[in-house]
Image 1 (cartoon, rainbow, N blue to C red):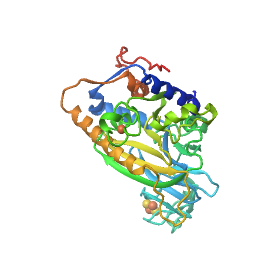
Image 2 (cartoon, rainbow, N blue to C red):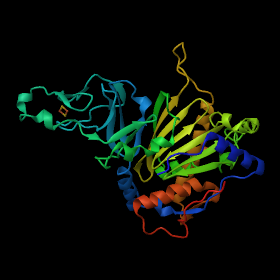
Image 3 (spheres, rainbow, N blue to C red):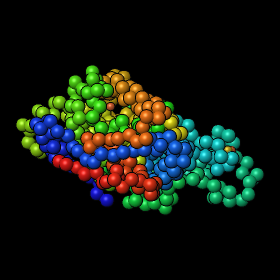
Image 4 (spheres, protein in one colour):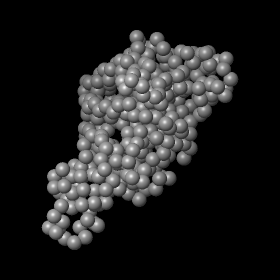
Length: 390
Ligand code: FES
Ligand SMILES: [Fe+2]
């Protein structure tokens, strides 16, 4: 699989052409049945498929030191990651092997993983360190009941897990393709905050809202529109993944800069969709990694890791990156629109919704999701592979 996007110089060049010509990248339109957002069987099929796919568990910056751990329900399945003394991050099912109690909660640091119920303790690699009153159990019980680890790998700042129902024998080669897309994006970043929010919105609507710049003027009139263009994007695909570049108006200053010095960071927001449910977005001083977990057909959990390369403030106050409040206001506007879409599904007005040629990253998402589900009811006339025009 090809796993890289264009260079900054190439993307800046494409943006400058769009600015000059008042154009944007165009692909094919896509019609998506509204029933795919409301049919319980479809939702269950999506969840089953997603649980078999490699997915981002967390940024590596969330578990930097040996003993750091982070628990998170991934696609509705309780898992946690812990970094071992050998420096390796391992993802486990979050359940004690005695009577099954959840082992850890939230984020923290521990020398050993101790279950609060009866005190079984595990080393950071998942092996059992101690069972109180072990004589009450069969011999060799400790050898048989290590924490259950899932296949995972780490590269370029992301921890990818094979999926709660994924291939337990998956190798890192099979898992690390999405990471490569990010190249150096997350290298050297540190974690600033982790937040979680539950929203009464289908998970696909939350993915869709990040993948087009057609709504900048209408929905972000006083937030993003003053600094960005409406309906001006570069859209790239790499396998099932995609990247949408949202240029800032200051990018026009790069017209006079040599290609070697042209860059996207600070002159655009890039939104990388790592199929199926991860969105990585860049801002001048920060990067957001958002994991969108379907909880129910109309309910999703969004976990957002805010990362930065900026040094912590010497006075100990937490870093407040430039533009953060603007991004937060924009996010509120996006949520409002997604709630409106979710509500509109119930109106009975539409059998399908339509994504335009200028929203082709969304068509790419749906086409790949249909492929992953093995859907044989996809209308061939609407499932044309999306083409880019430079
Ligand atoms: S359930 Fe964990 S020690 Fe008993
Ligand atoms: Fe938006």
